[in-house]
Length: 297
Ligand code: NAD
Image (cartoon, rainbow, N blue to C red):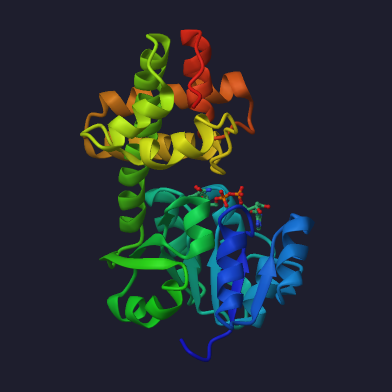
């Protein structure tokens, strides 16, 4: 993939920094996003703005997607001015979290136009996107994975999940179920501790030196809850989408998820109380309000 031309559709919280890393690694980039501010940021780093996903696909060999959900991926793949009609692109690498069913749908839409859809969701947050330390889970033909690996390593570490589109989504949903559960249960444990008189910072230090350590206590709570900034940079509505997709997949194949269902309802409550722009860490704000305490350090 050394001499390939790359494109990027979706320059949001994750796509913006990943596109910036590709350009910093010396790749010229063709980009599209309906958000003009996101496009001008990328153009400022040397990207070429295109008027549609199809125009991006006409101008490059491999198109990366970082989009909110399966509906948007389907529109970008097969809608009017979608990638399916592009003259040049033969590979679409979807870094979005959309669930296995939507991934299989996007695969079929693009396969009908001779384009290979690579299911490649990521984990590691905005910080990981900026630093290039994401986990990139990939389902694709093995030879294509091997070919793409050097460019995927611009974003972080690649993990091969298998050939069939959707498998990497299942991996991602399992991961995000754990991540969301950690946020919700950490909020409950921390609220109990501070309301009883413990110091929040000391609690985090003890948990991180002990068996309660998790991704919320190591990263999200110290950065966004103890500080009161509530700005993890991952929307609660996207976390809700992930847990909802996870529960749908589990139900479809007969895996009960009692704990996962409670976590989904915590995210529903967070969006209901804090609004559609709520941050992932706002789950803790809701628990704080219910408990009548503040988790600060
Ligand atoms: P975001 O909302 O910040 O970015 C999405 C971008 O897509 C926006 O810039 C938006 O303008 C653009 N977009 C919307 N409709 C479009 C269209 N029709 N055509 C082209 N672009 C369009 O979201 P994000 O946080 O960057 O997440 C992107 C994906 O990555 C999601 O699937 C999310 O679940 C996943 N993800 C996010 C994180 C995180 O921490 N933020 C971590 C891992 C995975």
